[in-house]
Image 1 (cartoon, rainbow, N blue to C red):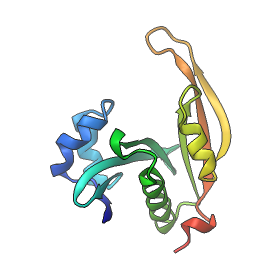
Image 2: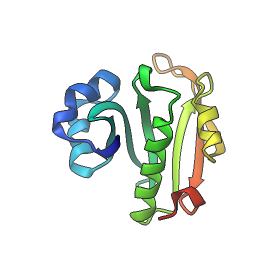
Image 3: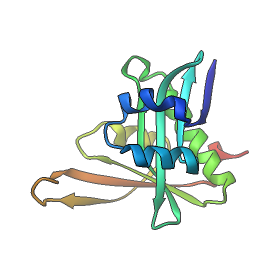
Image 4: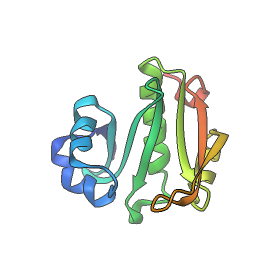
Length: 146
């Protein structure tokens, strides 16, 4: 049985096992503001999604991560669909996400109906990385209907 719920304090150890980029202070904010989700299979935590607001008004998925043994089984799609429906219910008309050009996630997002929306190059020493690709999607899309 698959369950998706908002992140809670008791998810901390699991969360930080998968998410190496979030500080503890930001984790607490994700709990407080309900800006993170955990997906469970038979009450076992197997993945997470977190987001913030781009331009302070557009939901932006900043991390989608499913534990390696559960990948390619539809859990990431379930998390994205849950998030999209939640954002639509909250009144947002569009959502965004991104991935680096050298990551396979770009194919996943396109398959989910996201459109390419440009890229960002960072070449400042210590922060350099492959180009970050941005994707957008309307919350009016059919699969996010109530």
